Image: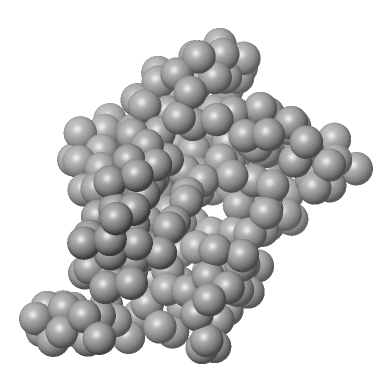
Length: 243
């Protein structure tokens, strides 16, 4: 697999107004991206972006809205890398009263949205000699995390989306990477009392790995330890997460 280039590229990042998404935009600009389209769902969130760099272009995009996706498809003149980062999570087990509501919202944002956006933008990506897709899943998408059951299912769907896209578009030259972080020091993981890497640290590790053409990226110590356990003994990881 050829190494991937970021310098001079046009990149779309979803969920770019905070957390890992915002860190991605900053790291991409530092690495020399020519255009970074920073997608936010709410126009009010544009104020959180550092628009002092004219290479950063705010884009209004709700990935659960088909009209938004088609508008962005018609707007982008070029695309080399799509980073499906936008996500949502609710603390819900499968037996909770809120399970169906949580599951529907999480599947819409964490799976159906990235699926529709990715397929809509394949035509643009196929025109790039340096095309790539980065899907941000979760270590909870490898094995069910008890406190986040419905979220785990949505991220497992994102994992299989990554594998499926890789099999389908990889032969055409579109590199597809999956990212499986543990808890990161962002608002989404505020309830986890443990050492958490910063969003900037995770974004840097992910982009380093992408440039090295790594397909499965475990960007922090926790996710790497859990991945090692999974590859050695999947049942042991299931039992650990069940606690």
